[in-house]
Amino acid sequence: MVNAMIKNQISLSKNQKIVLDYIQKIKKPVKAYSILSGVKKSGINAPPQVYRALDKLIEKGKIHKIESQNSFIACNIGDCATPHAVAFSICNQCEIVTEINDQKLFKYLSDFKDKSGVNFKGYNLEFFGVCDSCKAI
Amino acid sequence: MVNAMIKNQISLSKNQKIVLDYIQKIKKPVKAYSILSGVKKSGINAPPQVYRALDKLIEKGKIHKIESQNSFIACNIGDCATPHAVAFSICNQCEIVTEINDQKLFKYLSDFKDKSGVNFKGYNLEFFGVCDSCKAI
DNA sequence: AAAATTACGTTATAATATAACATCAATATT
DNA sequence: AATATTGATGTTATATTATAACGTAATTTT
Ligand SMILES: [Zn+2]
Ligand SMILES: [Zn+2]
Ligand SMILES: [Zn+2]
Ligand SMILES: [Zn+2]
Image (cartoon, rainbow over all chains, first blue to last red; front, side, top):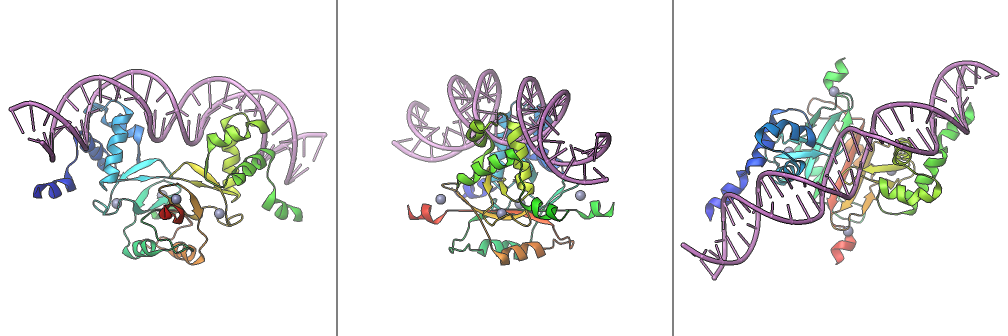
């Protein structure tokens, strides 16, 4: 069906919408159990409901997991075409996370080959430093 | 003291040695509670003893944490000068992890500046793909 | 030697994540 | 339309990962 392709790009289930709305509202990375607290009033009661929604939202490129923090953040690029090829900067002081959208960096990493010539489908890059706001203090 | 500099490079406490020996023996990434099981016979009884050793070994560049797996692996480069500037390849099928030692990649990442010109002290990069052995199957 | 720092041992608990199972809803297949 | 398949939900329980807190011991610095 023609509509299937269009629909697949955007269709989110009820719980997925609830969780995504919450994550997008919070501008910072947020942890699974904070999400659970935040969406209890919307009828989500238990961890599996949150984790299932998170998994699907990651697959669909709507959010990303910040591995070094076990936290989740809304995609800042808009439905990342490649949800497993992402880069972030993380402030060591305030722990704010910013998704990096740099085509040159993406190309460099996508083209990278290791010493045996193996090229990789995806990558997760987390930069650590001190953000401008924290530097100013 | 002059010896301090020399000593600091290598000195590990008793528990740190036990944990490092175990991780180096296992060639694959290993999880904290597997380490705990593996070193119980050496007199380490409880999680905090393992996690403390892990923290110090990371600081000292002897091991690295694979964030996407919550696992730990011995440094393959030899006391990484910058324990928080590391890159790995991870096979999606067998989950084997290889530390990448590529000066060009390191320079590229160390020199990287984001859009506001901020440069970062460290980074953690995990590439995902299929390793040669798994491709052969 | 005294003080300060680092490491150790132990108990308990916090925080993160998944297994398992029953049910419901939407979508394809016949 | 009935049936099969798939995806999503609700729920309980449990597994996995990690740290808090406290007292003691060893080591290093002054
Ligand atoms: Zn994104
Ligand atoms: Zn900051
Ligand atoms: Zn290393
Ligand atoms: Zn493999």
